Amino acid sequence: MEKKKIHRIEGPGLHHFALLSYDIEATIRFYEQGFGARKRYDWNSAKTILPTGEVFNVIGRLQLMDMGDGNYVELISGGKPASERVGYDVWNHIALRCDSVDRYYERAINAGAKPYNFVYKDQIWDGRPADFEVTGSFYGEPTINVRLAYCRGIDGELIELLQGNLL
Image (cartoon, rainbow, N blue to C red; front, side, top):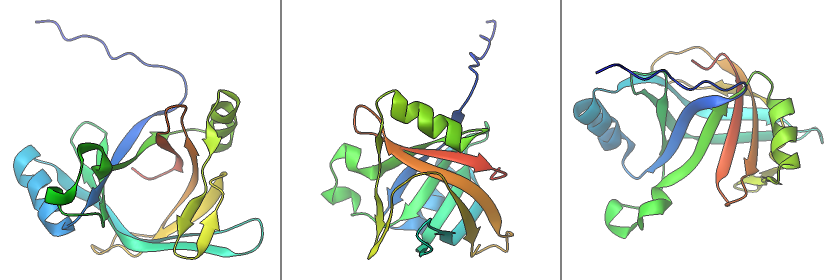
């Protein structure tokens, strides 16, 4: 059977889906054993300086699992046990690779997306494009710098726009 060509569009492409994991170590083993995924990058801190001068810092365990095709599943420590979940509340967001977070954020807003206020503890970031330093790898990976933005799509989906050398 002939393999179909991949449909390519100009602009963003899929980088990862994010999954809330109640027991992140068990979830890592599941994706490794069940699908052959590999641990690619992990961190426990992402911070930026907001236009107000405030530091916005998210601290929590995250693990990026390489699914073998250039796409990833991001595991975020937290959430409820599977027995207490309703199907859709395990997924957190979809992340799109961009060559310009600023341009695609503006395009998304103009197409009907809504700004997303990202709240972590007592901090609020309005989701507009910002430069983040991602640190704290459990496996000795280097600190990386990325540009991120978040918005809500027209169906309420949370969309992360990602620019930088994160894989």
